[in-house]
Length: 206
Ligand SMILES: N[C@@H](CCC(=O)N[C@@H](CS)C(=O)NCC(=O)O)C(=O)O
Image (cartoon, rainbow, N blue to C red; front, side):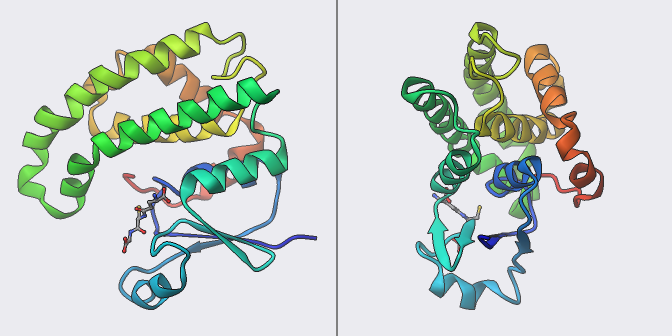
């Protein structure tokens, strides 16, 4: 039987899609929440790319969050059905990354520059929400299932719904207008396989 260890800081952000997937499929794993002050300087040196998340499977380290999601999705049957659908699911994951990267100045300010948060919310976050969220809505509406892929639930539903929830904490007055995405997030977070984890996970803004 394989061993799985997921390392990430004590937030959801790049770590949570993998955590949710592993909980959803019932795969036991070590959910290691790396302490930035006490552990990170030394651990950074031995990671594949100097960053986390890192997923270690049977002693092999996988760096880069997208590679981790794709690997887990493939291994546990949540990548989509057929090569073309898999490609469109992965493209949507890359689009989510574009969205997350565009919001990074706001996210960093929320941790380190409290004086800049309101300005960056107006100048960065809100315009990005209006730029990116309509695309997610139209892709969801075009799907033949209740999830983003025609065939049903895939890893990207975990990634999008988690990030949408973080956005909803930061700008509820904007995300509240995207009811389809709110309902999608509710659907994902209502999956019975996730309830035990969701009721006990640490509450974090990101
Ligand atoms: N492209 C990488 C980026 C990962 C990344 O930026 N991780 C941050 C935490 S969110 C990190 O490791 N920061 C600590 C550092 O760079 O020293 C991925 O998708 O995994």
